[in-house]
Length: 195
Length: 195
Image (tube, rainbow over all chains, first blue to last red; front, top):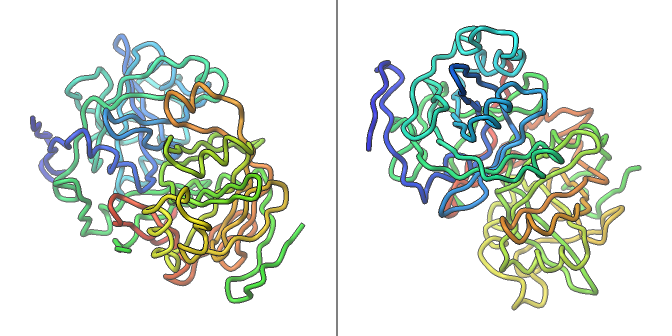
């Protein structure tokens, strides 16, 4: 299945085979986490994420107890991880710096655009280069004790300009992924190298 | 406390303030996981790792049930995460490709050198650019169900040529961290950028 965005400059989205979805996160990018519930939606930045399994694909992500996105995830049982490129660095910082609890729509406040996902209520973030639609695995003790959420990936997408047939092939500086260090200092994904 | 390696070209190791230890992993590098127990030691590669908390610092890492390093970690309750630079890419691949169960000493087989850690039985891997000494948090259900290990970081070190005063300042291509994608394809850490 393939869906098209309504913003051609940001490229098409093509489906990523579920067994290869881990490759969208394996290199350790910072992601945007989005969720929706009963007419409310929100988005936050999260550097603390990783793949957890290949097949079915699972992911782990740390979500602070104060995060409004977490409240929406706990209510809906679903979220999306969107992998933002360098072109969205200002929006990623904005998403990390303010809480959606006090905002009518944090997407708009941060200069981000939401679009519908295929299988979950949480929205995709436009302009990103990869997306993982996730359903939470019920591990409430982990959430309480460590703010740790585990989820199964039920659909995955990528911008075919940078990822196709299971491989990243980033060409432009603006398309590189972001790797947050601390306080607004990031690394961009660097050159591809083979052992 | 500062320890010196016996290999001056690989630089000194300086202590990293525990509250800033997460910055050694925040950008998502692939790590080497090492452990020791009753005279046996081993090392493996792990892309699936992330910080889990700031203070006290905690980490999460996925360790396959077949991994001999995991058996040593389960027996000793301790491990070290070492962050390898591009200069060690061949050794990282070697560590990912074979099991230490059948080797007298996987460190030597992979061209890696172990040196003592300060607080845990697991060894540090020489030539890396950062190190986190970890004690496992007892969450056996997570290990059984997801191969997921959570741990507290009890000491952290970095090569001051690339990380000091809480900041990465990588200058040379060989010193960049590795970000594994799949099957021996990596990204190097790229340029530092500010929002």
